[in-house]
Amino acid sequence: MKEHPTTYRITDLALSERPRERLANYGAGVLSSAELLAILIRVGVPGENAVQVGQRLLQKFDGLQGLHKASYEEVCNEHGLGPAKAAQIKAALEIGNRLAQDLGRERPSIHSPSDAANLLLHDLSGLEQEELHVICMDTRNRVMFMKQIYKGSLNSSQVRVGELFKEAIRRSAASIIILHNHPSGDPTPSPEDIAITRAIVQAGKLLDIEVLDHIVIANWRFVSLKERGLGFT
View 1 (cartoon, rainbow, N blue to C red):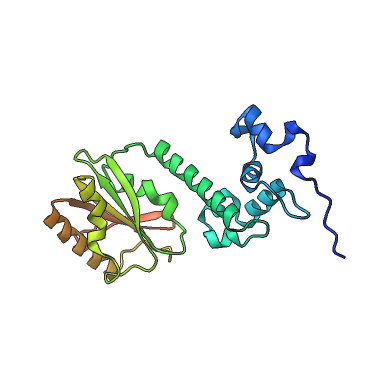
View 2: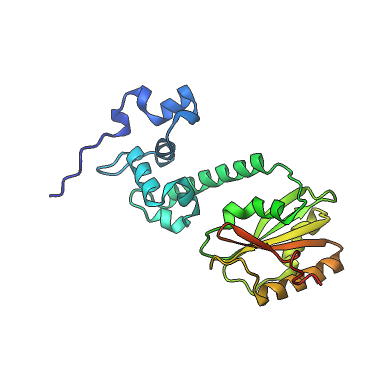
């Protein structure tokens, strides 16, 4: 008969040592990442209490950042989780991500390609799939809205140009900037990137929404198609 290593249930701990009680008494900031996850997980599995399950997740996915990037299915399939707990964890991480965006990107102004690239350099560098994002701005080049539009292999037949302007039209934006990543690690624009850019710029002229730039990000580097005159002439 298989024996489980010695462990303690959360309820075996003194009240002052339980994650939920520690949060109530001292604030969330004093809890470790594993303890915060334990509050979401609630119940452990044979051989692991909820904190230890949290520690295992952090080790498996290389921290909260890796856990945030992992798919719902990957988290769901971890021992001791399942659909409900995986959904709670992914939702909590996304709330934290959106809060960080609100605090760190509170109506910034964009005056150069680097200003735009820096808004998504961290998020897009190192991804295994392509993502295309749009930044909508007002007449003073202040960010109004940022949104992921596509995820997956991008080409001109898949990208619906009108979709890129939908939010800009709804919010009466004056201009937009398009950003996408190259999983290869090379930010050099491809002929397909140039063709898509040309179509987007032409559509912007018809809609009276200026396309200020299309930026390609890869491996913490970026290339501005506008600076290189690619697709904007």
